[in-house]
Length: 52
Image (cartoon, rainbow, N blue to C red; front, side, top):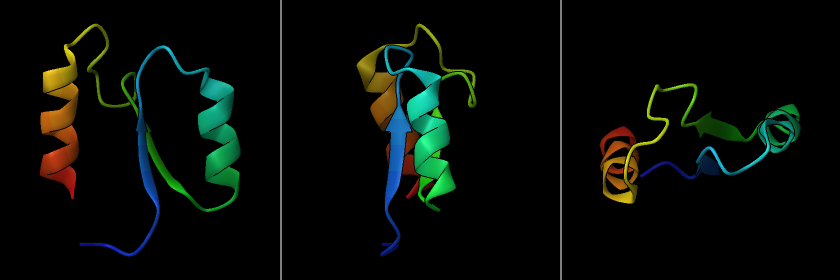
């Protein structure tokens, strides 16, 4: 497991938050980045587990 802070933000989180976190070197993906918009929480969680 990586010791680096990583976040996955769904479409309900303003994109400006992702930009701000990235400025501080935090690894952030968004549902739009990975084309998971409108997908269920289960699909989002599966993506997160696959990328760890």
